[in-house]
Length: 447
Image 1 (tube, helix red, strand yellow):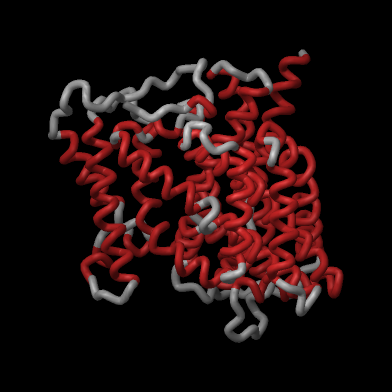
Image 2 (cartoon, rainbow, N blue to C red):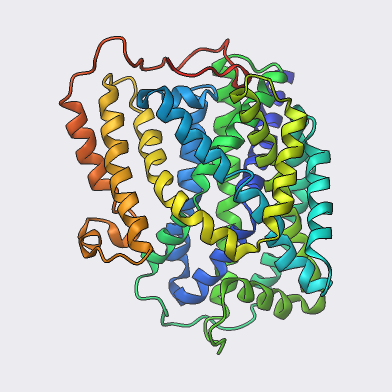
């Protein structure tokens, strides 16, 4: 009985931790705006959003669990050097260069500036990352800190906002959607959060935490992480649904050219007056703090492994927080504009490998993985060049291009071509799924 209770408790804690790390401030501002644009069709946009965001993120978590957190094994068919390059770029993007400093910048712009106009962004960054460093120095405690303490506060504040909005809507919902294609907008918004990339570092730190608590066997990890993933998905589902509905209740208002951030501020003020600004500040703070703690811990853990323990976990935490202080003061817009091209390139490549990892028992030819990655990479690079102003009309004609998935057909064609190329014996191994004696802290490069 005690063991069953332990599995259940750990599943809930892990699920809460995943929810909190996935739910950053960006996830707070997308759903309400989607509801505003969708009117009475808000539920269609919401369902598409939650599948493209939470669905892809949880799929990535489960793929990582299948390899007991050995992310380099998941990507092993690409080869050692491409795997190292791809993983390092991903960790840098969802870590010290983009996602981590963005949490601080978002908290400042959405919360602190509203409550304390004129407060120094540098001083706030020092305070914010001081807290992050303090709560991240002990890696085995990170999951418990987020799952047991910070996430419940985040959920309570979000629930207060959503319940108030459902019981006392700020307005009627428009019968006519402003959006031409609600489903498309939902998919694009969910896809562009790129939360599937964030699933890599959080999987590393959660699986390490489970191992340190005695869950060393692959079957035991699955018994915790599978229901934990359901808990995380359910939490995101409910919160996204509530936020999308709140946005829909403003769809008849004359709001001009209001942006995503402005809409969230407006809704909270309409619902809860001055207290709404305080509540929004709390929501943003806890959403960003939980994300920053999880990403900082897992990024430090990854680089500690990459550098073969030559740089301590503690030192890496301080370095990441120092970089966060500097980059966060560039502002949200600058951070996003600098990161967008890099994320556009690596995200499709990574997703091809996640999907193929579920078929590794059937696919014994690493050229399939390589072909899919190359196909996705070519289109992603062209897409990035187009975004810089070079005309490439043929990209818009590719299937699924309007949903942001122009890379899918080239990836499939690349995989088919790769399947026709026989692999060279002994060059690349396809990893076994079950190696329970290995832990995330013991990850080694695929040979």
